[in-house]
Length: 168
Ligand code: GDP
Ligand code: MG
Image (cartoon, rainbow, N blue to C red; front, side, top):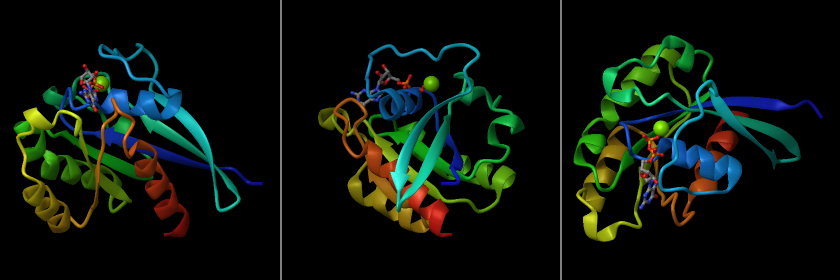
């Protein structure tokens, strides 16, 4: 089989759970204080989809999100993107549109999903379900509600993007 390799960039404000998402999907673990290993640009996981081997390379940032320091090299050649916010952080939700725009400026129209993470923290939630759904509709993106901590809906995010990429 010819192997398909998909570069996926994970964007969104700091502390929404991007590194945790990548670590959960690629290593199957969750830690309270995950810090990105310096020098590692991405983690990968191989899956089988429609009889094809698909290698997903999930790109992480060095934690400079809020300073707009994510370089072009990070976005270059990305085939898909995950735009992430936290259910407990209003600012991160308000930033969704500009993150999507930033990806499109560098990558054009690539498969993209919106991820609302930390849905396990129900009592700390600050965003209403209907406004999230309206935003996703407005941006023409599929929405996934995840808990990286509880391992809810994480695999689905990446299967959907791989599927989209293979069939586009
Ligand atoms: P990043 O800055 O976007 O990479 O965010 P991190 O992955 O470093 O996560 C920030 C904090 O949120 C860490 O303490 C994580 O353990 C925590 N976290 C990530 N995902 C979840 C989740 O689904 N639920 C809860 N309760 N905490 C989470
Ligand atoms: Mg991080």
